[in-house]
Length: 110
Image 1 (spheres, one colour):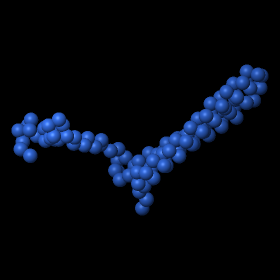
Image 2 (cartoon, helix red, strand yellow):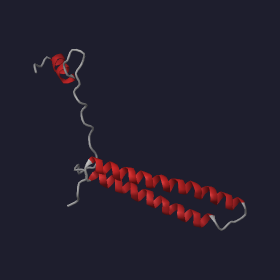
Image 3 (cartoon, one colour):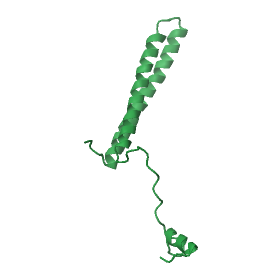
Image 4 (cartoon, helix red, strand yellow):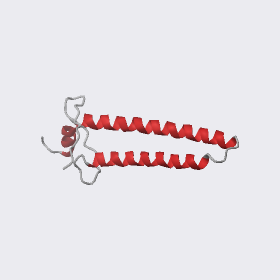
């Protein structure tokens, strides 16, 4: 049985994953810049190792995305998708809630 995380725990996990993705993306931007600089300078042996390392970074990002999907799926809904919840009933100008006004329009007594 997998442990279900609370919402604050999930937010910490998501924030950490986003930080890791940010660092990986900055690393890839630097890698592209350094590779282009080296290649245009005449060193033709750099692009292949750089492309392989970039594929490793892609794999890390895809793995983190899969982990996020699994984290969301473990929240209790077996399909992994949840329908949006209904907006909370708010009091209008007359003090009645939205649901009560809807019932009044439909002719239903609360």
